[in-house]
Length: 211
Ligand code: VGL
Ligand code: ZN
Image: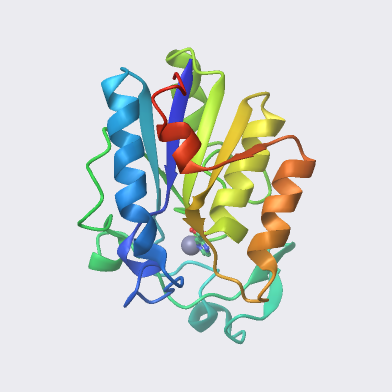
């Protein structure tokens, strides 16, 4: 059984947000078509939501580190981010053009550790409810879209593969931060090297592509 995973399409990651990703909101019409196709075929769609407390350790202002630089957070390498996706703020809300998605998995709630993946925190110390939810629905194959290609999309895909799912990444329905201009390209390559299938939305939306 197949499921669509929509990663972090939240205001702070779109144009005008505090951690705006270039062209972030451009993927939304395509993502909405995918949500409709999955729902029309009675397939599960799950959204992830970055959901930080105000005192989250990944925020540069809380760490004393410089924006975009890498430091250490409780023993793990950590990029220092601007304050973003603080629980309950407008920035943490899903973009208003995104269709509602019935299942939402929140992550990044522990101030002491960041959580890029929809499955685990960055140390794989704690799990979200994602794997259980997918197991309960008999899911064995994922289609992943969203923001950011080089962080939350990438780690969600790699953890999905690690847990034994077949994983498809719909590349034109993803956008990246690109602290380094080639980061998204390299992220797609790494996902592919680890066993993910890179696919286009055109292929998935083709009526010949059965879910
Ligand atoms: C993300 C940086 C920090 C993401 C979340 O959604 O890719 N990136 N928090
Ligand atoms: Zn975050």
